[in-house]
Length: 245
Image (tube, rainbow, N blue to C red):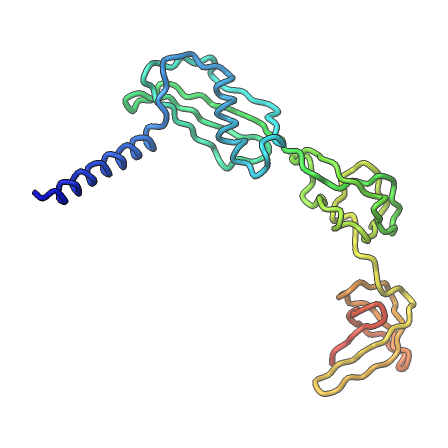
């Protein structure tokens, strides 16, 4: 066999050994020495497999509660440690199964239950806000609160709240929710507006009186001052509503 052939054969053999070693590692997990393992070891595993998998910086994640059973657990020499996360790591309750095997036989299984909390920024009110009042910077601040205790529509960016109005009276200190505020009306009840009627080949404009408040894009009742009839029209801007025909 030529020298080039020998080198190729050696390369392929080394490649085979590397692939085999990788497969063995994937299937057998981590070898551990004979020892007695306590809570500290399983908290470390929990941090490695759950806390670091979350999309927040580790310093913002807290393990509120953690338990492992059975403890302490004695592991014989040559046992293999396998870790499995049940479900997807998330704030709240998480479960790890830590198995110790030797020669493919399960020696002991430790169930690790942990509850993690993440403190995230949320917008809260600094003072009482009456119904209909529009929010300013003086009304708002940003604090960190536990994520698992927050409603789904909580507001985290102050810009999402500025200029919007309270749908009902709001108390200070509580996280602000999107369902509690709304865009203020740009057309007010009894306001005189321009009614623009658009057809395929013609556009007609006349005056009308808004019969209710309206926000951009909303359909409101408008009284046509010329015909004295009530119609429904879409709010375009602070002075214009539109109908199609």
